[in-house]
Length: 163
Image (tube, rainbow, N blue to C red; front, side, top):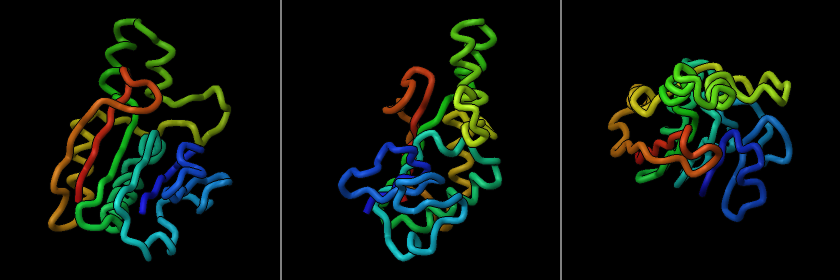
């Protein structure tokens, strides 16, 4: 069982994926946290949030990560991707790709949608720390930072955590 939170169309209709988003046609149309009751009834092998966590205040992000930890089965994989705040700040300070740097920090405001604003920013190090804070005993077995697979691969980063 694979769950994509804040899907935005990434996994809609893909075999084996269940989706959660604030807009249809997601399998569960709702705001998170909290995860829908039906999601808690499954043991998930993979949960992903691609460009999602930065749209939450830190306390809600921590709650959502804790809930992901709880619904993952043993050996389950959590996948997170988002802009690297450190990279964006460096580019902004250097005056390089300023528009892309601003978008990585503040979100894509071209949509004129408040839901596209970023509420917080992360680096691989700060996200790893938040993951460790959010896990319940015995915690995450492995947390690895990697190159992003979606959106802007140079600017963004990916963290995978195994339960």
